[in-house]
Length: 194
Image (tube, rainbow, N blue to C red; front, side, top):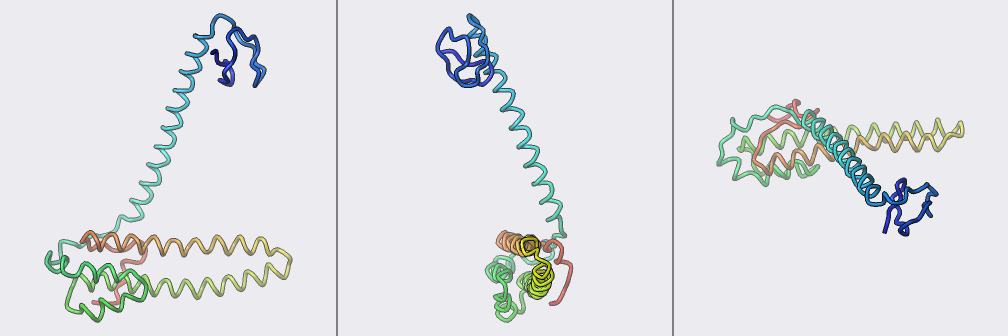
């Protein structure tokens, strides 16, 4: 079977035109055409893979710079880290942060993560109140002038900030589970518990 020199569709041997795209075919050069097309496809696949790798590298680099926060793990006792790892993980599950605050008050490691989790929980509450107010105001203003669809779009975009809190929480859980004492991105520098 021959392949079209233009679109790659399978053709009958000796076909003068492609039945799919209508491109004129060179008779007698079907193997050469197939090889040329194969080479073009390989080059295209290589370029696509290179572009995908470049995009993945960009995302990885952006996340790495976002998560490039101070690591103070060396300041903590390894036995304390091992003993209070679960307490540290609980710190990032919203108001379950109260469990390590009261159940492990003498653990420096649990207290570090409890502080991070408490700051995160307070920031989430502040954002929740702000989001509710902003959503109501945007909904009323744009609703009155007949742009309800635009209001919905703005509110949907604002809700992406809630996704950022979820991602920051996951980062904290991963750090705690791995026995690291790293500050959370953006909000980790605030200290409420000493």
